[in-house]
Image (cartoon, rainbow, N blue to C red; front, side):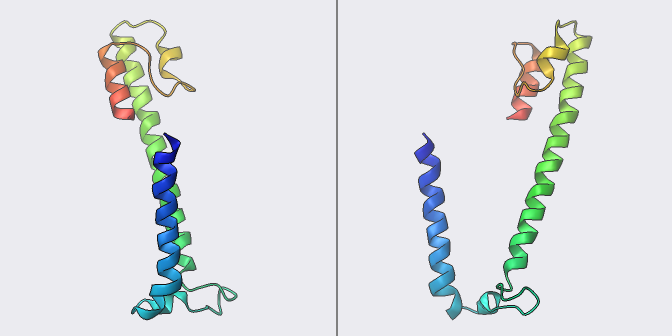
Length: 112
């Protein structure tokens, strides 16, 4: 099952490396691979990778805060419905909530 993930990722990385080294210099975007004096010889597009990493980190943080809020919401809903052990079932380190109740199913579907 892991090969289903690794093979496409490897092919994508190799294709991107080939495109960058062989084809990018003949496109209008060739200024991105020229060395930059401000970055000590790094390509000018290096700033794009830093920007992408920053945006990805921000997105993961927002997603984590959203899930934390949903945990509180569905935990309160389950306690209101009279479920037992809501604190243990809806809290970390549990990724998913055990049980077949409506709040548990709703949280699991939202989390996925």
